[in-house]
Length: 122
Image (cartoon, one colour):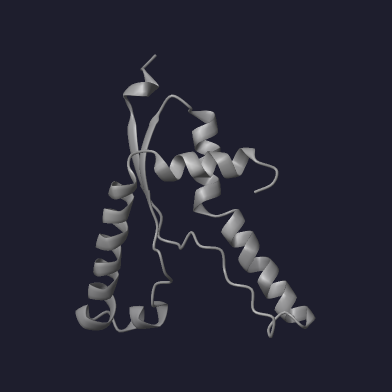
């Protein structure tokens, strides 16, 4: 059997890891509350939750960096596909988010994910 501790994984998540903001105006009706529920469910069951499950199953692996967009990506501009409106702003955001992940140090986000997974308060 191979030694899992020799495996190093970097994760790049294409979805934002920030919880969607609460908007009192849009949650005053059933549709607004349902949409808020689906946003929160997607956030809680999204990439970070999947990574936390994998980490629990393979605890000896070195989970080095986790990178996710720090802000929403401009989905409407994807249809344009030009460098100035679509790819360049995403590249710049990705570079900044990647640099931030490296500056936080190895395992930083993964430790926070496991703390979130194991804590009943969080």
